[in-house]
Image (cartoon, rainbow, N blue to C red; front, side):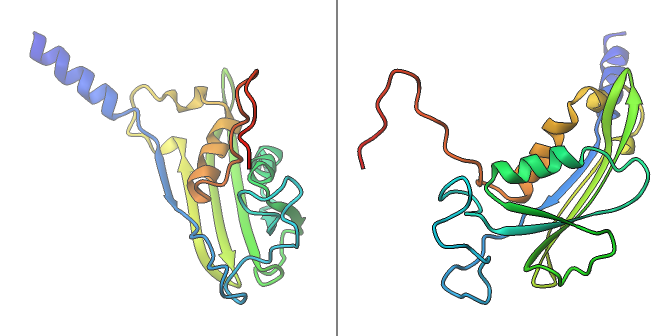
Length: 179
């Protein structure tokens, strides 16, 4: 009986997975101006960290149900990208760095991120991709529909552009380190 329950639990747990795959964007070589991001003098709007104000143009797929665009843009801005939204049929050569974004929502007690596809191009070449699909589980209990869409998109963006969040502020009551 114990082995049967353990096997059933194992099948239930393995059926709970969603599909997520990310190929991160490599940081550009700032010694080569043709390869490097186009960095404005003085850093980005939030200072010198992360993307340093790199212009990232976002092309949003006009499909019905392409939701959570503002969550995606907000996640990019927190990493100090200067974000510009382009029309749907814009060429990937329109900006030095372009992200094609498609996301779909679904409803199960609350709206959740059903799928997302983010492809990043630098100078027309594909340099990164993030795919998420909550429906590719093999059945069973799927808890991915209880994850907040903003959290899942932030996770995808962090994996796509690793290490670009600002440093955390010092704890309250402590002095900032001297330079």
